[in-house]
Length: 174
Image (cartoon, rainbow, N blue to C red; front, side):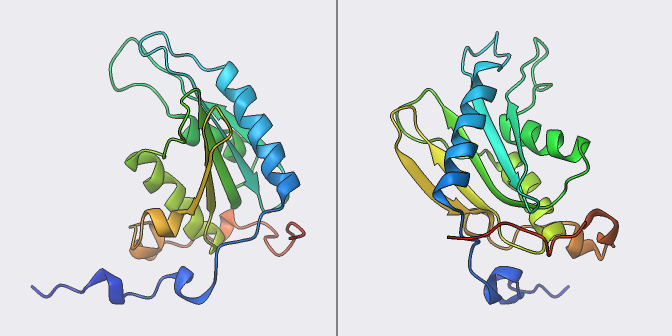
């Protein structure tokens, strides 16, 4: 069996930089994620998290963590925000923001990074990830920085064209 070094496999990020997100869009994402955090259902952990995604069409969808008394049945805020957008027929994202009540920014978990990566492959573009702490500290990264060489539907040769809707229409960048 022969293995290929995943660092040698060309990724879309090898040919482009992360999208530029305007300050206004980041402020909208922040307010939306904070509103989502206020709606979190976290009876077990008492740790609400909010997230929001910005689509190629300029729409923002919020999400929050939703726990269950059955361990493992909960949903992270990041996946909730993506699912909210998908329920509205949007599959391609420019940015995501995640926030909590902790002073320092929190990172998406590994499962969320995998989920975000799949949608980056649909949009054929890196997704900027902002992580915002309760006191306003901001960390900025991207899905392809946080999950380099991530596995996704393109690796299986899947046709994702039905999920790509007018991605050439997008945001104006500052």
